[in-house]
Length: 433
Image (cartoon, rainbow, N blue to C red):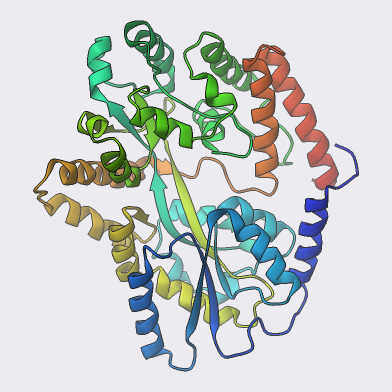
């Protein structure tokens, strides 16, 4: 890592400086600005009801809702920072939130939150919204957990009685599927800017990613075993060749075409499979997710953060608490087929699912998957903390793993190279760690 910054890094640093500075009010009127990610137009009725109820109890502080496409939030937020029009409350994924917080861009919500508010949320996801340096940088909103969606027909053709539960079972499973059916067992991408699933998988395999100084800890026996595991699977032809060139969306495409026996995805994707590939959906079963030996699953989290530039931080926190209260989370989780971060809402969702009596096979399938998701949450946590630079770490690890898979270097060399590259970056970014 050299001392030369990319244009994007310079923009982000400059934006962070603006975020940290005291700016003029973020909107000209007495409105609270809320930005969310890819929820319109599907959830327009939900937000219309939610905002109308808020306005009845807060007539002098209406909320202006803006929904953004997933891929544009970073660019638009940075542009708003420069224009001093950043929102008061923004829906962020944890990695981007951590990066902004590390540059002084997000408010520490701790002084604005009572202990009672903290008790409303699942402890594991509440803790995942906390940064050691920047404090409580967000409030948890909605969650998803991956399940194993399994093509029962392919398993029967291969003579496999039940799908694998642990990563240690995958090599035999994938080999048998490939030999008996010509299909693949699973798909885990190593495209650097795509899913973090491979990072989470490394943690499940016992790999410690970083030490307390934010230096590489993955150059270890566990790290080398994990890299060798994935390298060997790929070189043996037991993973689709596209895992090095295409993202996780390709896994759904292969599953819907009947070419993949197991798709690691959320219950919310079942309806699209039912629509796009009804024949495959008819032989699909939801099963618990693949895990390491301790059985810990991963939970993916969406949060609500308050930019430091906001002039209405207390009001933004009040609205975030309202948006994520048990009643509102219960309705949203039901409509979106996700999971709530509210403990009370999760109990309500589980009870409703247990009482539900579906009248069609498709509805029964979705109900089964959602109930399994709720149960899985009991043994789930955020496996990869949203540390500053975590996307850089993902890029470094995935790039080196790609090289090993493609036989450009050995898997051990890939680990060593990744550790060296990360430590150069970490030493430059956190020299006093």
